[in-house]
Length: 430
Image 1 (cartoon, rainbow, N blue to C red):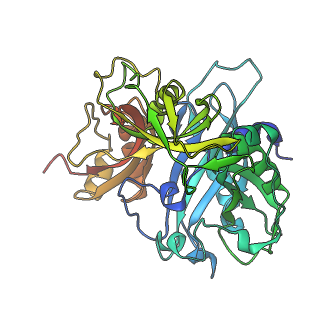
Image 2: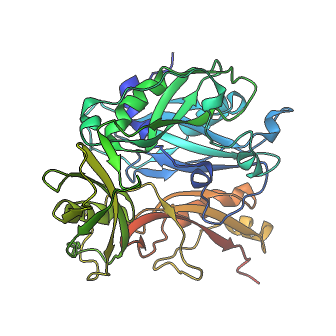
Image 3: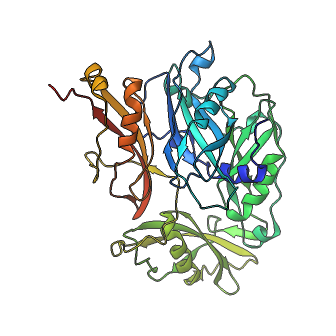
């Protein structure tokens, strides 16, 4: 009997898979793989331990399943020697699950002593299946990760917490949910919205029920909740209400070469003319805490016509100028963003695959394309050959794992990058 990963541990890992939309999820760095292709897309929780994540050949697929494009996620346990001790598919088309469990058992990881003896690392290997129509099915209306409120058979309304009411919490909250074939919510992850409204939204989403989903391939969607402005709160968008904000130049992190504008929602107490809350709603994440701090220390002048009791909600825009170059990245939180290297970016370290003489003779002139995921530090995290003779794949993947780039920065912070390495096979005797 297969070993089962504890539910709480598995849930903690699945939270790392949160995404904003399908197109962000299917980010291959501009690479457009051929139909009937399988890619080892990512490894969640691997912490740099993955050496090779093999994916099975696409092989024969029955009618119906051959048009499916999507992700299959396999939860694995890995011991301290880097050996996979169990593999259990937890999402994706049921037709593909068994073959991916078999592939996951063949994955190779570096030995690690990060956990106590006898314990196991819990990870999720994420495979991308490209069906008959390529990536197009995930962009169709019937498969898009969109708002699914209209498909609900039971959609309870969340209650706003007392804490949120005190500071005029309102707006929309989007919760990404995964459904089983019966339409029950099996996972709920917040995507956006006021943090004070998220907990109630997640709990309510888990109690929702949707139409039977056994007839579709992609069983994910977004539940959107809209919270009205509490009765004691008013907005500067109302007639006769205006406010002038006096905010000094915000403090900029010295170790971030970044700039731009941040929009901040400020809740002001008219009696004291002091802010009671400031929440950044857009702009570079690294700058948001500094914008909130500047908004909370600013001064606010209300219009003379404003004399009603309650709180006033106002939005200000705070501009940051570029700061000094990066000294370190302690303020840059690790994010799931997959960026793109600018055209022409070259690695700072390269390696060539080692092929046997027989393989080189038989495949002279052929090429091998290897899709790689480069970590924030410029080191290759995963490598997957997606073209060429299968006998060329393993040497090419090993060589690709030795490549290295300068860290790619977005807003002064390093992000992960997906790109492709092309190896050319030649017969050295020619």
